[in-house]
Image 1 (cartoon, helix red, strand yellow):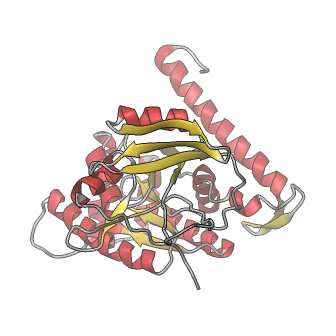
Image 2 (cartoon, one colour):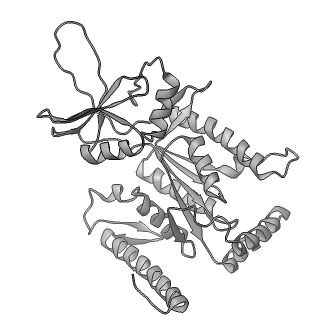
Length: 339
């Protein structure tokens, strides 16, 4: 069974071209060993054209707005080697690679086949100790399995849980990143498309380190819960480690540690199934399952039969409730509400 396509660009300036793909084109990658980077590609398509003479193969980048894309690339230091021309089948241009060669890029006018596979991507659930990251991650994994999605669940604490004799945070994170890069590469070779990660990241630099280690697009969801909720969750676990986690959670909350690193904040003070679905809705992972369903279609949800309309209304109510909480806080702070 064919699971993908591997393309190779040959260049006498391989290191510079790799850096260009990473820094200018923003392609995530994994290190296959010895600095040999393999880049994740966006969705692809293949055409076969008649040719006179020798066989040849060509690579083209695709975009949905050629002028905006070229402007963005210029802003990142890329040189446009060929200006836009209308070829009938698309608006064609080319950018110059660091080795002097041209890489064509076009905005298609032709029909494209429907994409049957989702791009490789991931989510990082973060939050202080006891915020429920691992539990929500497990629920998301369960829902992905029900949808038949190829996924992997990684609690990153286990990738740095070792008795090295060091209390250095940087060393701990460094060990985790090395292990994550190796494990993610194995999962990618096995055809995994969606990665669910759980880990308390404390700074933008740590987030960037996780992104670089896993080598694929990664969105960050911070789970938020009041301290009394954390106390209640950890009360049933009397291990010494959990007592330490409770003290660490209190210190992190007091210092606002780990805030501002996220793409979105989601409250984890509700049933775990609701929170997991909120996360998946933000990611766009849940609605794909509903794309071919009607509002009257029913399914089991927390022990009851509900239809899709009920789920949508419930999500709207929850978001409205949290927006209302935000208005109340804003009113207490500056006396105004609304946008």
